[in-house]
Amino acid sequence: MIPPVTQPNVTHTLFPVRSKENFLIFGAPAIEEAEILEVVSTMNSGWLGTGPKVARFEQEFASYKHAKYAIAVNSCTAALHLSLLAAGVKPGDEVITTPLTFCATVNAIIHAGAIPILADVDPRTQNIDPNEIVKHITPRTRAIVPVHMAGRPCDMDAIMQIATDHDIKVIEDCAHAIETEYKGRKAGTIGDFGCFSFYVTKNIVTGEGGMVTARSEDDVSRLRVLALHGMSKDAWKRFSDEGYKHYQVVECGFKYNMMDLQAAIGIHQLHRIEAYWKRREEVWNLYNAAFADLPITLPVESEPDTRHGYHLYTILIDPERANISRDQFLDAMTAHNIGIGVHYLSIPEHPYYQRTFGWKPDQYPNAMEFGRQTASLPLSARLSDQDVQDVISAVRQILASSR
Ligand SMILES: *Cc1c(COP(=O)(O)O)cnc(C)c1O
Image (tube, rainbow, N blue to C red; front, top):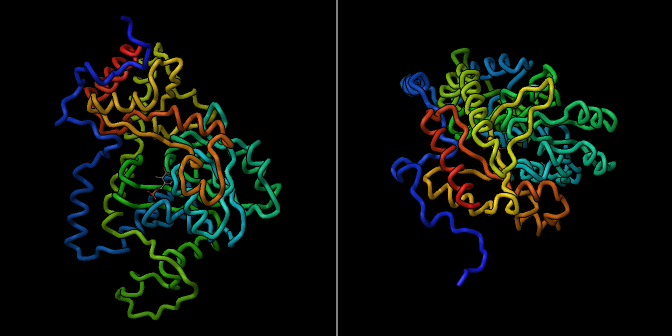
């Protein structure tokens, strides 16, 4: 008897590319001796909290980004929240963002008291589509939060034009995009604010950590006050050897400051940011070459006059074409002991947002499609040549056995 045609069970008769003990962790950071020593020396100095190392990290980050100001915080989520408040977003205001992002982008908008409004992504680039933004502008729109998805810059000329036309602020979510450039300008310095993440899977890491870049001095003062309880002087100046200074609480702020312990890691990571980027570009090109003949969609070419941040290498698995579902592919990669990511199920797939805003995934069809087909392969500066070959072998084997 001929068995009915079903999706092949690819995990069944498989010789794993790697051993279990050697599981390739998705997004494992590269940590080197310099930051380990710096953390130890910070411990020995006794100054663990916000202090001179944070100040140095802020200066060096601003200089890398060609930004006037950079303020270190304890996450990109905090950076987004503070930027929205500093942008003057008030309860009941509307803020437009993308449905294809990490939940933190939308949650920050909600925490600022605003109503998140989603604008679908471009079916090619995965970035928010300016034509969709325009459709959602109302008299209550106060800000746009574009996300440079996977490290690919958004269409910032179009977005800034919309912002100018409607007198609204732009807060760039640069969690994937520290190295990203758009027409000669650095991501995060084009809008009013740029928000960065140093979470463990990001391009450079501090464990937990984030940074805000801002253009106006007023915004910077507000961000600094908001990031530390709403106090008018920050703690390390307060307790310095210049003598005790009284602080004043000038508004109800947050506890979002970065520690010197984190900056100790960040300073050395930042020194290697370009070397890490080059390595990820190398891996990116190896993947492109190795997968060119497979029945999957590879990342589209970078737009002219832009620099991709190469944060995520995302392939799209269309079950019709690949003869395997995305989730089967994820399981098969795991069975090969290779870690894999999904960036992201679209925001309206999650029950909280459905319940609260009545969103349905098919209202944002492009984001929904990407979310249901996307898989991110390991892309970290830490990958050895052997790791890369293992990823390639696993992907090829899975897709070959599905045909
Ligand atoms: C990781 C991430 C964030 C949140 O960063 P944290 O530093 O973990 O708060 C926000 N937006 C996007 C797009 C992200 O990938």
